Length: 235
Ligand code: HPA
Image 1 (cartoon, rainbow, N blue to C red):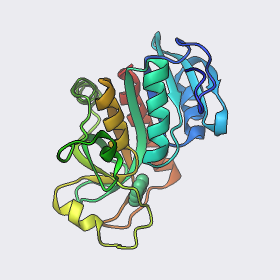
Image 2 (image 1 turned 45 degrees about the vertical axis):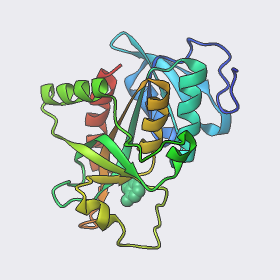
Image 3 (image 1 turned 135 degrees about the vertical axis):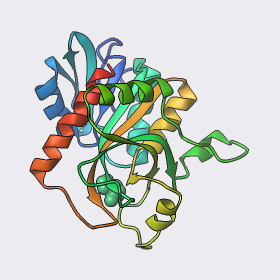
């Protein structure tokens, strides 16, 4: 069923088996233009830009997902089921839930807790634990160690709500050792698990719910580069 309702690509093979997934489609454009050789745009539907190029000779794509689990749920499902994508790597930002997770740190989601009902579709007789691909996680940790980039790996929280009426609710997740809050990883991990493909979520800490500190644009660019260098090596 290609093209799909949200991706206008008419042939398989135009999108690489490994796709980097920033939330912001303009980020996808910047990533393609900055890091990929010979990037070719493959999607403009809803301005959810996608590009394929090469990195160190390896074919890799980058595409926006939009914000939130419904949106990344759509794009990741179509990439996996209609375009044969095997490795889906979210590159995003998060809010820190722990005093020792500082703004500008890099967090990798080993698992993604959530307040979303996304897993209800599977009719499981219990609670599913959305988990990163071990292969991608292991490789990402190895790349970070080799580059001497410090990372924090652990449980993250994928929230359906950015402006939560209960301003203190994050503290309960923090009390369970959850490192950071974002809005997409759990759905990505579930789509990948259901399809038997690999997913990973790498994040830079843009703000802290603990200290209310925020990063400047310049600081964000620096850590963003480090995150991208890890993500691109996974292709
Ligand atoms: N909440 C949810 N998602 C986020 C945040 C946050 O504070 N920061 C970056 N992504």
